[in-house]
Image (cartoon, rainbow, N blue to C red):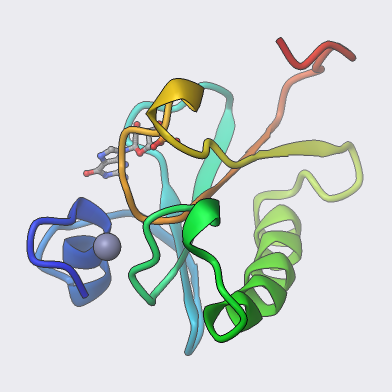
Length: 115
Ligand code: 5GP
Ligand code: ZN
């Protein structure tokens, strides 16, 4: 846990969120400023700043994170129609919250282009 991290505060329940899914390792909640009809953030409970901070020990969080992404897609009803998963890594890629998270986006037809 990091003291001044918004997502750590959400994990601790100090800041409210609309929870979609939770297990021992992961919390998933609706993005406060959704970019699509379905926009959920899948967040490892361990404070890891970004993909760049993954190491041989903490990389094990990737398995429950991907499992949770599938669960979130089922819960939000986008598993069949398709959804997009984005991880912004570093300020240059638009990362604004320095706690590793996966954006799960869906509910709208998306084009083939990423950018
Ligand atoms: P990033 O730009 O770091 O990849 O994504 C951070 C995301 O967190 C943004 O889409 C932003 O809307 C969302 N966000 C920031 N603060 C909060 C908050 O307090 N609650 C929720 N639910 N989402 C937040
Ligand atoms: Zn954090």
